[in-house]
Amino acid sequence: MGGGASKKAAAAAALEAGELLPEQLEKMMKEHKMSSDEIRFLHKRFKSVCVTNGKAFTRDDIPKAASLTTSTYLGRIFDALPKNQAGDVEFESFLAAAKVFRPGQSIEDKLEFVFSLFDYNFDNSLDSYEVQKMLQLIRPSIPESKQRSMVLQTMSEITGSAGNEPITRENFKEYARKLPGIEELLTIDINFAVQQEKLKNDEL
Image 1 (cartoon, rainbow, N blue to C red):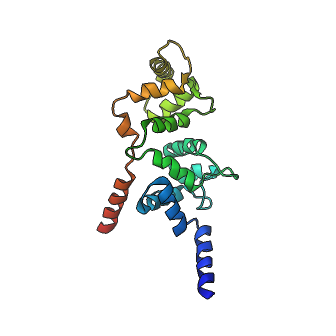
Image 2: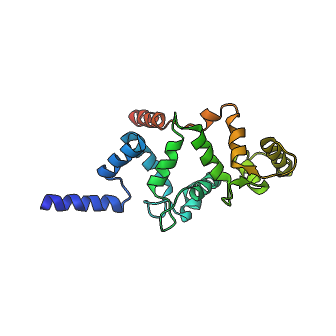
Image 3: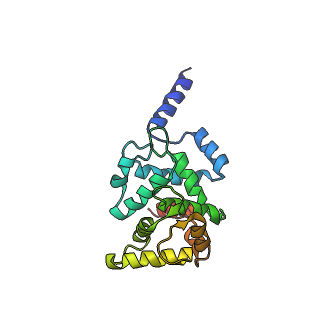
């Protein structure tokens, strides 16, 4: 009785602190086909942005969690990920998104996620405003005076037409597939990151 009660109390405390329970870890390993080390590594990273309550990523966490540049990425990621009833991102959603970028995963899934990051109004197309935001995010060094012409040039290259015709999801993916090194750019080797962290810790 006492042992069972203490285990329940420990589990409740772990949940309250936003930690993973063994049964949760096992379920995630099976569902996402990831190692326990990879999931723990991602969970640690996830908790680092959960400033408000340590358990879920809230909109209030965005300006608190990182530098201004990184916060812009966090804001877009937050908007693109599924939310719970409270409007917050839970670790399961974060994990599912991270899995998309592992080695060997479909380039289609990776491009779908990238497109969703820049489709601010969720209308399945990118207009000139959204393309400008995309360029500001990935090429912040472009002078403001040249942004408009760069936006029009980018939209023309992707759509194959003059002017500022919106970029469709298929236009975007067809164009992106042909970019040199796109597969490598959109691949995150989580296991390699885990091993690097272990080596770093061993040196301490």
